[in-house]
Amino acid sequence: MRRKTKRSTIAGLTVSLCLVAAQASAWDFRVINSSGDSVKVNCSTTNITDWPANGETKDYSCSGGTAFVQRPGGNPEYDIPNDCGSNEIKATTVTAGDSADTLSLAHQCVSS
Image (tube, rainbow, N blue to C red; front, side):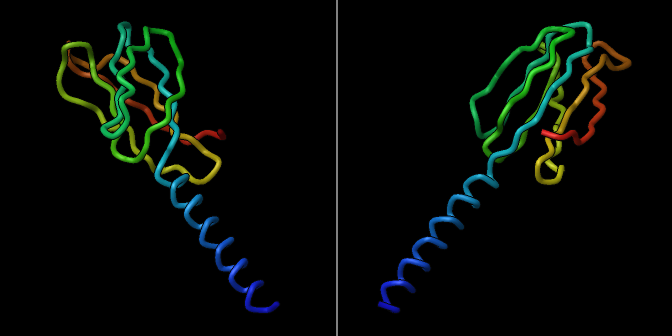
């Protein structure tokens, strides 16, 4: 009886750890677009590629990798960091930069 209980416990812990590890590789973020134009939002590992319009706020999920925003037809890509604590998401406000191809980003961690 004890041997079966140990196996069940080990199996249960293994499954739990796998679920936690899978969940840790995905992260959520929010983009608040105040740039005066649409911006491209993407994730390097998930095919998001969305274009929220000026004044829109949208939530996204990225499966690891790097999330970024950029101006339409513009360069460079601006990274959105994944550095918030548990039960928080990164909220990034995007505004126009000093020149036509630039953006300014303000980041904060907010409750999810």
